[in-house]
Image 1 (cartoon, each protein chain N blue to C red):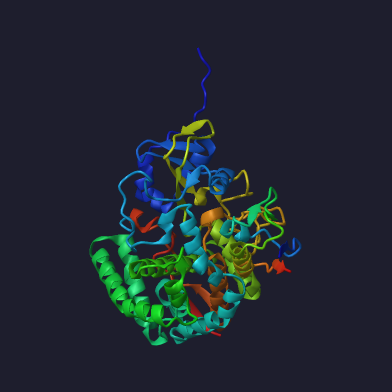
Image 2: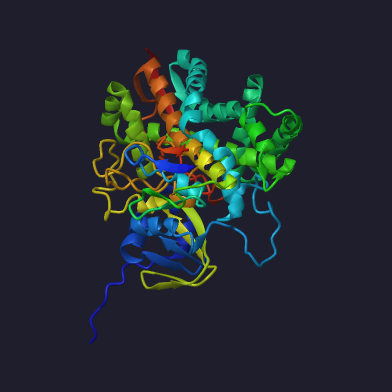
Length: 64
Length: 426
């Protein structure tokens, strides 16, 4: 599965990378960087889903 | 003769324990920023950081600074250092802290928070109903402490008919933290009563969980284990204190500054209720409830040529960084129409698309206030609801002693002790 971030919607809240550093990190400009574009590991998918839940900008999605 | 070097005013570190500092820390903050940006306080054995970008820098650097209050190699019993019992603030930067935080963090942002808006509206209305016919209100006891504690109690899923009891316990508990002595004894009694009350609920919801926050905390698993009943109680107490007390005082600080500092902008807010959001932001910069955060170095760090050894205590004055003239123009002016401050929702990253600096009032980074979005919504909504129902609002007394922190023991939380205002029902 692919983790996508809509950078238009993203407002650098930081919830994804502070809560789920397994999957995201803070880029130089404050925008998140996805560490693993393709994920199949169950725990990473759980992190992705939790990140989707806490993102206040509704900017993260998980696609097949 | 050698040339004189201006090393600025000496700072006697005992000032940090003085009444003068509790009342008005801002001149001392300025001296710190201008002359001692990394002040080695030998009396309290710690280093004091006061400029905006230095505070930001420490918050962002998890490699060098830890939030944990324990010594990793020293004697420490979990939960002993907190009046509220064991709670997640003690876990520092660990994965355990992050997992515990994630259990509840999602409840306070985004859609989950939106779902609670009607409840915040309803609770605000009920609280206002109780005093609207009196033509006057003491804001701290009758309004600002009422709304947040009823909201959190509702989110936890406690029975609504017990809310009054809960508010009373909460007020006793907070007074106990702030004043010591007889207040302390009553506070501890209230805490024990509250814990006895909540104990069977924790056991029941561990078995038959519902949709409420208390159930969520009860059944959450960290590495396959649930929290103990004692840890759940600590978590609930922390939510009350962090989610109740801070929002309570934030609301009071906003009204204080509109009533006494900027009556002209009070008129603006009356005419344009959307400005409550900007009023909240500027309050969080100019006079936030929490002024200090504490860190410990994980390794030797150098700031402004001052060497802080590994395991050195560091105090970050958010309240000082927020008044940094290197960042904000006329920093000592309260102005809800300020153009050099990021208005609107806060970011945990401290970085904004509009390029403006934000206030430091919620901290930044790993330990950024978990309830930031809720605090803002609760404050803005409840205040707007109140303003709709009153007119000709004015201070009851011409003079006010101002915002201060009641004592060192209160954790330095700053707010007015009392705030009376008069109004005509709209």
